[in-house]
Amino acid sequence: MNASITEAERVGSAFSEDGMLAARQFTRTAIQQIAEAVRPGMLEEDAVELAKSVLAKLGLRATWHPVRVRFGINTIKAMKQPSVPGVVLKENDIFFVDIAPRYEAWEGDGGATFVVGRDQELDRCARNAEELFHEVRAAWRRHNWTGTRLYEYAEERARQMGWELNFDLPGHRLSDFPHAAIHTGSLAQAAFSPSPSRWVLEIHLRDPERRFGAFFEDLLLDDRFYEQ
Image (cartoon, rainbow, N blue to C red; front, side):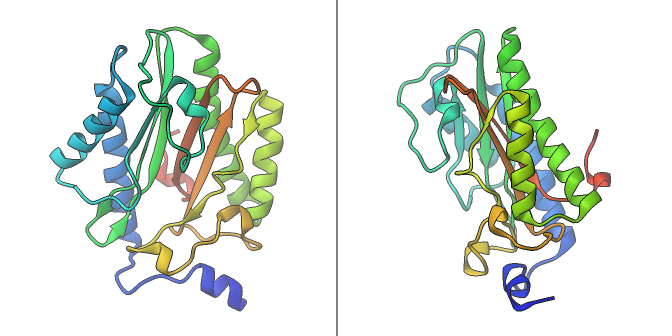
């Protein structure tokens, strides 16, 4: 293992596989509970507060990046871009949840997209984001590809699906808190095959006309940790 890989995959003293998996399980449960509480007619700002309250009820108040729920046109934006204020979820609409709870010593991070109503194109975008996540993850396991190659493949497949891949969300490290003190480089910049339980794979698809987008992210893990 060369020095660059050693540095990029370094962990803190509290790191454990079981701890990372527990943080992941908490994160996925919270995402689902937040999504189930979102309703058409709700303001995006109110949905963010709702998400925070769900996390608090689950016993978690600390997050290592802001809680995000994005509706409609705001789903095309990169995470660091502010939302257009005052966006209301419509009867036929799309939204995503992106949370990063600190679960004891470990970082969680996850995102998923949901559709209300019966718009087939919105549904396809949301479905494709999760499908592409798993396609890229499968390529990682099958081919032992570098992080850079994984995102090249993701871009190619996204285009074939009819979407744009947003490279402003290029994947990142995850660890015992805080991973930023360990490594800040992206997964798309990794010139090696990433190890399990240390990296988040992010897939953000956008409609070529920039009307809406879909997002899915999760910890990079073997097949046995996912329900197919």
